Image 1 (cartoon, one colour):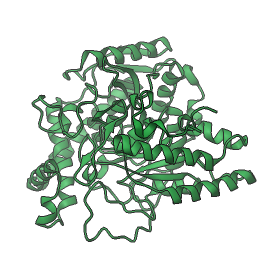
Image 2 (cartoon, rainbow, N blue to C red):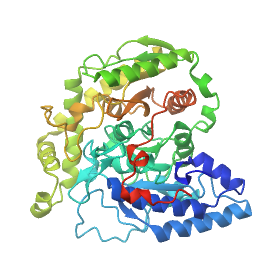
Image 3 (cartoon, one colour):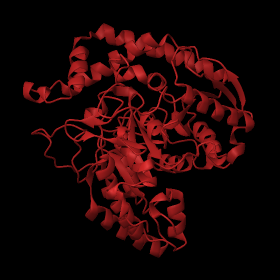
Image 4 (cartoon, one colour):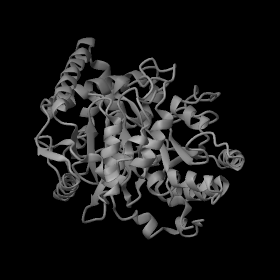
Length: 486
């Protein structure tokens, strides 16, 4: 039977249907792995053994009757502690405040859809305070380590989810992405993540970061991401900006397999014209692009017509820092003093922006959206590295000695496409000399989520996304050595 924690969601449900596996057995293994993963890399703020086992037992009874509740019935999932989950606190990576006592009676839309479909909720994963930065550490929960090197960062802000998926604590996780927050940790941790078109997955409560913030699937491959998106990508009346029903099932879009990219017009931008990319990253991404060409894609090396990145970053900062300031506006001095110092700094800056500053940033955003819309008239997909480098030391916002001030300086490939609301995915395409994962970034036109998933799936089918398993699993620390595999 092998390692139960290595099975995909699609494999699990196929075995449930055949009577070969029990959701209870799988959940017991996933809970043991979650406890060990929490100890090894600090990926969880909460693990719910009793709740998960109760949900698994109910799932087992449904499968026994031949009446599964949905396509993820009995599949262990985790939820980033930004999203509401009924019965558990949602503290968003922050220290508890007097108002954080509940009652916690409501699910976020994506969580509600998973619950309706019979998913088993293992627990909630770590995030920096309010998801404000591209690494995962906070005064409340400490730093989350990388599955390939626990002394390095998992990335963020969905770093706990990425580490949990990479290490087998459930094949599915819900993350959020306002500037790269599912794709950054996916790249650093060697998993797959999709930031869907804005509004494809409803979000409630609305993010203080406004229409920059997306909910997205974090999985071990594109097939599971399509399965998850089919569940969570349905309208919810609590989100006034959600899209209508998807035009078709995302899982169906993958059926072309490795032939799914034949004839696609692919623009390959190795550096968006100006980014310094580490040689190992550049080489791995180019090999993956060559594989796309081998599969029949028509690849052109060219840069999209985006403005200089310094200007884009400043506009993003105006929108992002203003949102952070709004989150913390009600805080008294005592609670403000307890914030991550970096968050405190950007909140102070955000509070100084005027309405005209904000609208000027919106102008930059609209110009980028028009430019990328025209670009995708000529090209179906844009390919870049996900990150210019691999994971650095945990516990810091920027790589030590880099001279950088903010996380946006080392994430130039991700946040621009939150500005434009486009679907964008990261999948592994190799490792560097230290064995750290490298990510490939696929960007589609707005509403082309199925195309992005199809191209990613083709690369998985062709073996281009195959990398070694995490070091934490290959040479497990003591907390993982005695965990049964099923």
